[in-house]
Length: 456
Image (cartoon, rainbow, N blue to C red; front, side, top):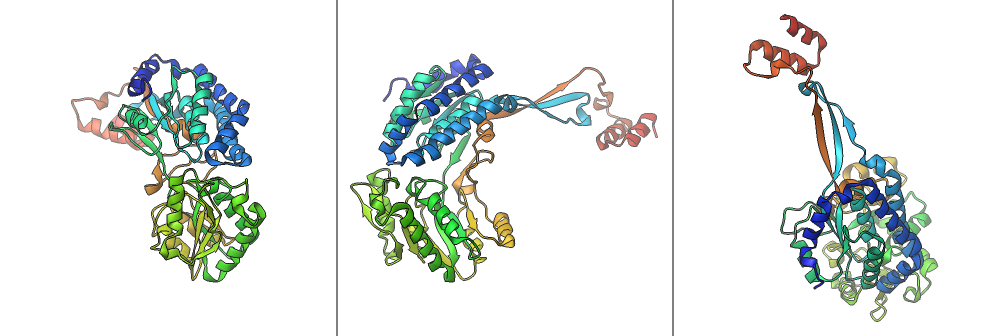
């Protein structure tokens, strides 16, 4: 186990207590350092992601490097506004007074990164934690060792290591970290202490496909969201499609055509398709595909290469609801299609399952769209101006942009009262007149207040 892991939270707490991380100058300097990492080390980051996930350069840039760069630039641009106290109204009961909400850092926080987007999901929460003024420990995922090693090297080189620390390692190091007291944990675990968490999990994200759409565009977007995003190893990746029985084969044909356009006749030979992260996950996906309840349901793909840790984009039609692939988050390149008699039935089907992290619909039917928004509960969608996080089984809390700052901040209410204008009616001994006057004050009715004052 790395030296100092067992006491790293305690070590950081003394740094945080000094007030060092609370200053805007320090926060800006660290955010600028993170921006240098994302802009000056693109090649090394891309190479690390290729080593860990066989991630294509375009996906590495678009889904990880550009996302981290954008989040950092946004934080630098908006930080002063985010940290400015928010004025709020006060009531007559505290008159004369003023009130505001102050965003203060939580303290010492732990960020545990995950392996499917090992760079972005390390840097983005780090940006939020630093912008909010916290001292931070980052634990990169050991399942993506090349990215973990690079993050450790670059963060130690660019950041203030007295207040931002990186801990590499596996289960022993993570266990040691979780034994300590944190003011917040970002990821999918909590410690033995009562600790607030942001849990961004996943779930079975549905895609509803209506028949009144541009099918080619829909097929390309589904492929982009499923296979061109880390080969389906993404928490918001489409996990199953719902469409009508009569439209299903048209959708299959469209997906088949566009998949060939994107990845060729043999996708296993394509350099544009990410690998499965390791043999354990490859075997897990193979088990889903070999389930006897989906036997004969493969209509696209199904080929696999264990040596290369690759599975071709695979579509399964009309799989049973009790099959493994419909009862586990797939997190890979398999995509079942479930059919219903009428597209309106898709909403009820989705709601029989746990709440997903994201839900998608392709339709031009305004009424159906409104019903989908009203009735389907899901976590969110990837856009830095919107909060992103789970609901129910898919997680709790939210982040992205200002919401990352808020996730690592405490909204402290501050009330300031002057000494003038103190209302004697608030104090004992209580009399009927005092009660009448206070009721008039709380009603906000000027006429009632005047009447109470003159004894009417």
